[in-house]
Amino acid sequence: MCGSWCFMQIKVNERSYTFEENTAAGAVRARIKPNADLLIVNGFPASAETLLNNDDRVILIRRGEVPDADELDALLTARHTPGVHESVKGSTIGIAGVGGLGSAIAIALARTGIGHMIIADFDIVEPSNLNRQQFFIDQIGLPKVYALRDTLVRINPNVRVTACHLRLTPANIAEIFGHAQVLAEAFDQAQQKVMLIETFAARFPDRPIVTGSGMAGYGPANTVLTQQVANNLYLCGDGCTAAAPGTGLMAPRVGVAAHHQANAVLRLLLGYNPATEEK
Amino acid sequence: MEIIFNGKPREIQASISIQEFLDQLRLDCLQVVVEHNRNIIPRQRLAETVLNRGDTLEVIHFVGGG
Picture (tube, each protein chain N blue to C red):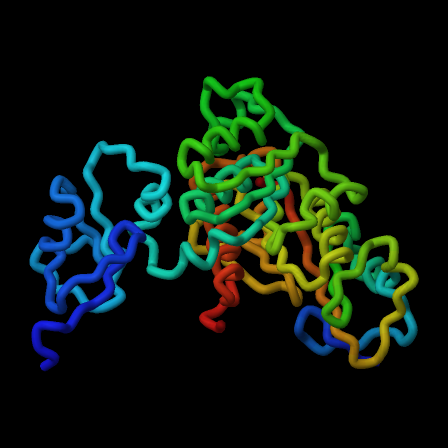
């Protein structure tokens, strides 16, 4: 229709290139990175024959190769829904407590490419944490926030982590999380959860809090929900199953609740209600 | 008088504070977050905050674990 002078803009590993219309993904690979063995178009693995359209995003990956810093950001998020990473890489979130909930929330959001995480916890890694918390045997004895920061940087060096090894109190919460757009509550004790929410909400009433309550035991994962329980408060959990004698905390269900929380944080950053389909 | 308590209409005694209402429900205020007319109320203000007709009150109970 437009002769031989019709071109399209394609982003390849997050850099812009111009190709003739109807270029196939394989031809892009031949020009930019012939040794790539993985081809991803708009967040999904594609064949070499896939025809590209203007504004498509192509990621070319050579398995086993550690990319340079410029490419790494794009490659880490190659399987994201396009646009998500751009929206979250400028975001700052807070995580209060990095035990079973907080460590899993942090890892999920580091993989998502959140720009800046403020993590705070007074505790150190103990053997009894390893049944559900995202730490390793060689981290036993380290402050949890420093151990977790090391892990997060190993996953995604582009995430900035502010690690605060201290006990959060009404006197320091507003200062520590002053830049957090969204706060994830990830404490163990119910009274501490309440203290954190009251303190943060009093100082920053317009900023959402995502809290966890009720994830002990091995009851059905399907009873863990994300609910809006107040104007700016979203609760993830079954709401009732406390950690108690006879009802322990274990990786599967704690992980379910933590990932509800991480998804709620992500939805809030993208402008969606965590609990409904609403924007 | 009537307020909306946890999403449902509820008849309560007139001119009582949130703290008195929680006491009547035998709720431990150390384990609940209270939202009054869409604002979260710190526990030190529960006793001084009086409920009025038509107010909305959400009481969210928390359990331990994380």
